Image (tube, rainbow, N blue to C red; front, side, top):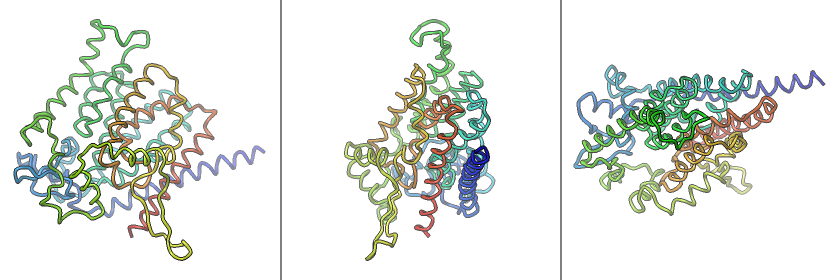
Amino acid sequence: MILIERFRGALLTAVLGGLVFTLLAAIAFRLLGEQPESNSYALLAEAFLQGRFDAARCFDLDCALFEEKIFVIFPPVPALIALPFVAIFGVSFHHFIALGILCFVITGLVWWQITRQYQADYRLALLLVAAFLFATPLQYVVLRSDGVWFFAQAVAAMLTSLAIWSALVKRNAWLVGLFIGLAFLTRQMSILYMPFFFVLMTPPDRSIFAVNSESIKRLLKLAIFPAIAIGIYFAYNYARFGDPMQTGYAYIFPPEWDALGDPAAEWIEDRVQELGLFHRDYLLFNLMHFFVQGPDIEFSGKYLTEMSGFGDKGIALFIGAPFLLYFFLAKWDREYLFAALTIALIAGVTLFYHSNGFSQYSVQRYVLDWLPLMMLFVVRTVQRDNLGIFALLVVQALFLNVAMQALAFVANA
């Protein structure tokens, strides 16, 4: 019986290792094949180097056309990360996947330290970190970091993870504010983490509603860098579009570029041009893909044996990453409440957004905007006694990730 148990444990470890290795190999394959002129952050970095905010062109058509000038609409921090490399190699710099891998490694190291705060068993800690890195959309956005959207997501996941690390490991409110400010200048929704961090940094024996010198100092330490970041973003928008509240999304997909559009993205252009960035009509589509949609594979032919269609809009969160259900078993204290409210707010806004991430084959990438919060409570909740069950749920998520990416590779080839 003992031999059987050991064999089963070794088999599970081997399967986990094999799936992780396969996903790492997929990143390496994409890294070696990355092409120049695919990530518009290179254009934005070039513009900064030339003292401009407008770009000479656009690599992905997801740019704004305003007063006959082209603007990369996305917040600037990822471009600043790429800037020294663009300064050396020029706008043809094509190692954004390598930069994404660097973010990935930093994120992994950060989560190892966070996890060890709560898990003494290194095997369980390692499994939790592997789950966050490889059984969520994080591995996929790193693999696709040659695209402007995916690179920004990898950077933001790193920065929000660093903010959590700063709060829990370093207990440094200044660092928390700095990383959230940088995250906001990467993915704007990150600013909504701030109430949670105020609660997280408040000592357990103190009321979060107390107004005294201690709470005011804590708030100021947390808020100064995000406030500066908001000011920078407003100034950046004003310099580009003459309006501090205008991000540029009002000017994307101009009619002048219709002939250049990607037929596969035509539905997104129609949505933006005819319904707008946010609309209630998007709710059903986004709800179905967030909670219900499984792998979307179609078969045709007389015997329905030929794969004829393959959905790229993502699959439901708890189908693609069932281990995240442990979030609901966490202790329901004030930190949990504010984390849940933050998650609900960010996720709720995106349910009315014109896209749920566009091109993805497992869990939709937008969950990365709040997933570090959910993962924190999964880390706190899983116990050593649950190791086997948790490992099986992670294997399921990894298997789906590998299977969907393999099918996508075959379909696209």
